Image (cartoon, rainbow, N blue to C red; front, side, top):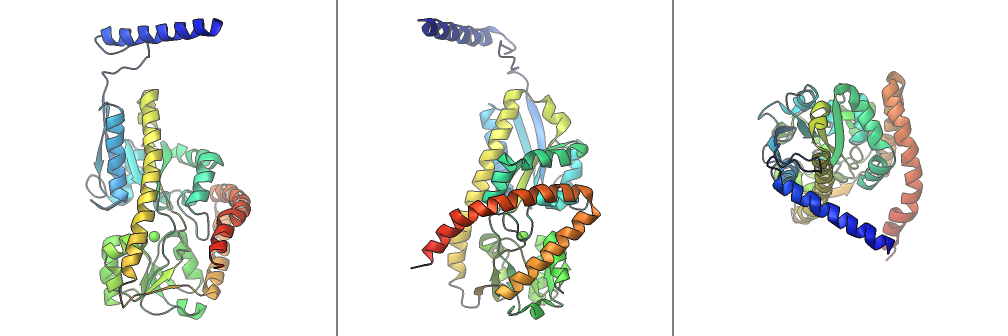
Length: 367
Ligand code: CA
C-alpha cells in the first residue's frame, strides 16, 4: 500500500516535471537542463581525411552525439592538417583552441612519455586486457591524472586489435637479419628494434609505400591487412610477418579540454561518455571484421608470404623490450609509476588469460 503511494507520487512528480518543461518558454524545467543552450564544438584528429575506420569513427561519434543530444552538442570534425597539423592535436585541445581531439596517446610520448602505456606497449596487453585495466583496473584514473596538468580529460575511443609485424623485403630467419635493418617503426617498438641492432626510421603514413618500394627502407609496420593493403604495401614488399609484437592492441583516445568539459550539462557529459564507449566498440569490431576479409584477399596474392617471426627473434625482442622499459622507467618517475601499475595488472590478468582465452585457443589446435 505504502509502495503504491510512493509510486503514485513519483509518477505525479514526473508528470509535473514534464508539464513544466512544456510550459517554460526557455525550455529550462525542473530537471535543471537548459534545453535551449546549444554548443558548437570542434574536434581535430591525427588521421588523414577519409581514413577508413579511424577518421570514420571520429565522425560517427560526432553524429551519434548530435543525434542523442537533439542537436544541442554539434561537433565539427577536422582531419589531420585541416585545422591543425596531425601531431599538434594534443596542444590544440590542451590550450583550448579546439574542444576535442581524437588520436592515440603514444603520439605525445615526447611531451608525456608515460602516455605510451595508454596506447600500446611491445609485448603488452591486447584489447581485452586494456579494456579491463582502463575501465575497471584503475588505468583510466591514472591516465586522467597524467593528463590533468595539460588541462585534458581522456576517454578510450577505439582499439586496433593486434597489429601485424610488418612488411619486409627479405626473410627474417634469425636475430642477425635484424642487424642494420632500416625499418619504419615508431615509438617504443622502434627503440626495441634499435637495441636489437636495427635502424628505426620515423615516417608519416603517406610516405611509406614509396620509401619501401624504392628501397629507402627495408621494412615497415603500418597497421594490419585492411589498412596495409589500402596503402599498397603488398606491392612494395613480399614478406608479411606476424604477430605485431610492438602493438598488440593500440588504444585510441578522445581528449577533451577540461575547462570546456565542465561547461557541459551532466546529461551532455553522459552522452559524450556513452557515445565514446560505443565508438570504441565500433572501431574495434570494424578492425576485426575488415582485417579478416583483407587477410583472405591477401592470401590469394601469389607474391606475398605471410609467416610468423621465428621464436628466436621474438625472444630477443622480448629481452630488448624489458631493457627498454626498465631504462625509460629509471629516467622518468612518472613513466615508472604508470609502468608499475600497468605491470601489476598485466601479470594478474595474464594468469586469467592463460587459462581462459589462451587455453581455449590451444584446444582448437589439438584437432
Ligand atoms: Ca602500427
